[in-house]
Length: 137
Image 1 (cartoon, one colour):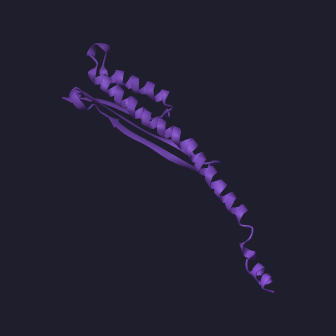
Image 2 (cartoon, rainbow, N blue to C red):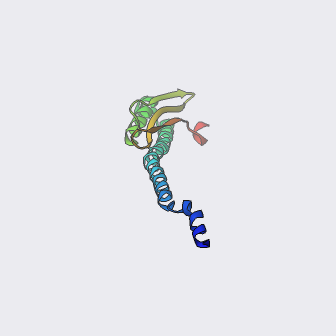
Image 3 (cartoon, rainbow, N blue to C red):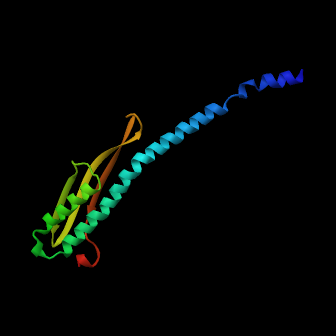
């Protein structure tokens, strides 16, 4: 009789492993999908920051015989934007003040974090590159 009582009391605890495995598997797939889509966009953004800084430093250090420095810096940043797969509607401002150049880029890129168009994360890039160190003295 005692054996029947224990079996009846634990009847609701049986059969939960498959459901837990399914929930964990779905969660892992969603996290992997989010990383698969977000990591390249974030990497391109950080690489583009370095390219912007390099273009600004080269524009400050460049002699004026190559043309107007702001135009040269704009061309380099536009070429870097194409190489880093930025959206074509990014905003670019290159300003020259007191023989120093600053470049500002802003764009918003949707990243499909959850599949099937359920949720798109809006990756916002807003960076201003300016020379620092001995070039500004």
